[in-house]
Length: 305
Image 1 (cartoon, rainbow, N blue to C red):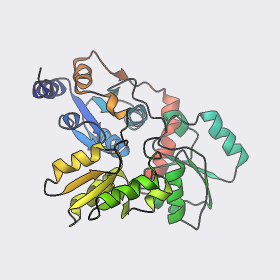
Image 2 (spheres, one colour):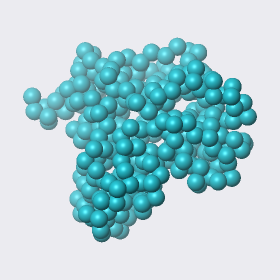
Image 3 (tube, rainbow, N blue to C red):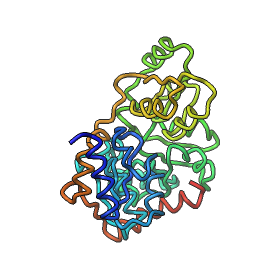
């Protein structure tokens, strides 16, 4: 079959079987084209909760599918590729976080949404890369333990100096691998371009940027800016997607190595097989895990996240 034939079959099956397809922005273009909703992980979860479909297919990684299940426990949630994990989300276990809380009982534990459902059960409030600064600034606590991304945590600490933010070593292996030298080289190669960087990059890279923000923030900035050239400092697929969305502008990748292998684990054929009922993995969380994990998400929502 051609790509178009596979896409047409997916579109037909999802309508027949009442499936809502979510695709994270880092997925391949041909997958985004058959999705009902695209965007960042938490935005997708909210969209899934508001959709009327009985089944949700998450084209992304495991923690994203878990978050969908937490917010829509009555729905059948399928992860498109069972091997699609997230090294950052899986860096800490529950015992580690509990030990940190015991060592620092006067600290509020703030968890990046990029954490497992299990970790969310022992955290106080969630944040996204877009809402982290806003949420932390509003917290009724001066001492914050931020997990798992020390780079995002460092970015937040600079924006909210009135809080004492303790960081634990961890982060995204794709974003954090980029060096300041690589970022500077990209600027040298494209002197007319603005550099847009995700806060999961190391502080030395973020310091060179014209704009630092979430994936959706980067895309929004590039689409609305009157500028014509941009270096995209997040997963390389975003430069490609933006080129389709803004054909009158030019987008460059910051490095050739910013590729998330877990996001790329899902193929268009995987999506087809999930719709046929022969692929993917149904996400199962017990009621207690959902209840406990939901608390830190509800705390974020209450603070406007």
